[in-house]
Amino acid sequence: MSTRENRAWRAEIFRDELLAQGGFKDVYKGRYTGGERKGEYCVSKVFRDGPVYSGDFFASEMDVIKKTQQLIERFNAGEFIDKTIYLNIPQVWEFSVDSEKTLVEPLIDNFEKFNSNTGWRAGGGGWYDCMQALSHFSYHSTGGAFVLCDLQGGIIAMALF
Image (cartoon, rainbow, N blue to C red; front, side):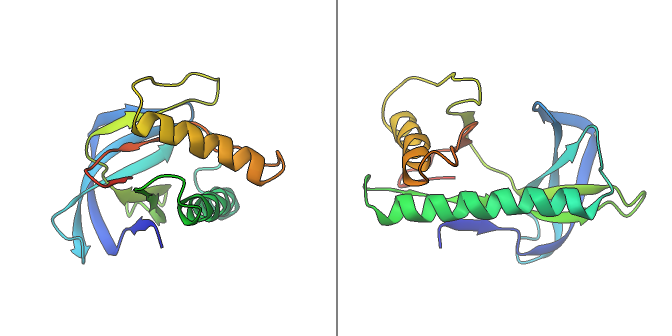
């Protein structure tokens, strides 16, 4: 499997400083305090509006991640590139203070955006072109039913997260 998972059960989230902000979520840095990743950095993605306490909402988000994982696995299996694309798999956790739900996953070093859901794409060749190829593949391999976009991650020597 081409995934990175929490393998942790507790973290301290630093909610006093916003790490990043997307269209619907605020992202905070944290550090795992329990589990195999103890001591490593993580992120907590908190939805700004909507059903932040609803299990159904987060179940739907996890369904999207599962479909994304399937498409990435198929793309990697096709050996279109000589490297591997990995997917961070978050877990739905609850803050102990107020039971607000959050998505927690390992922090991605060297984070950058590769494309958006509005048609923007980063230039530069290499991994940037690979990520455009993944978006293209997702559309055509599903007969136009799905397109992976708003692709973000970090580049290491032989893989992308």
